[in-house]
Length: 56
Image 1 (tube, rainbow, N blue to C red):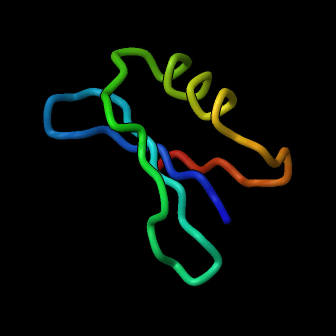
Image 2: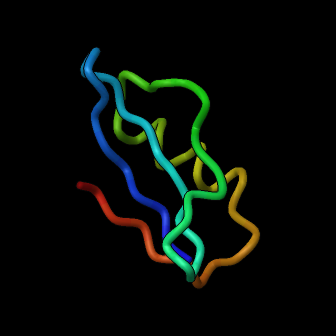
Image 3: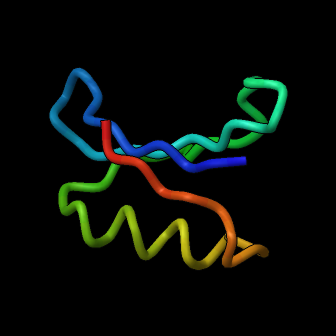
């Protein structure tokens, strides 16, 4: 599993979580103006410190 961070059409940061089978199983549900806020949101919902986080 891995988290992916991206910018949406409004220029806000969002994330989604891909399972091992490449299916999206979670997303941020809201945009963040600051990249650091987006990363913090991932840390709040992450149950595994072993998931990679990629900014795309």
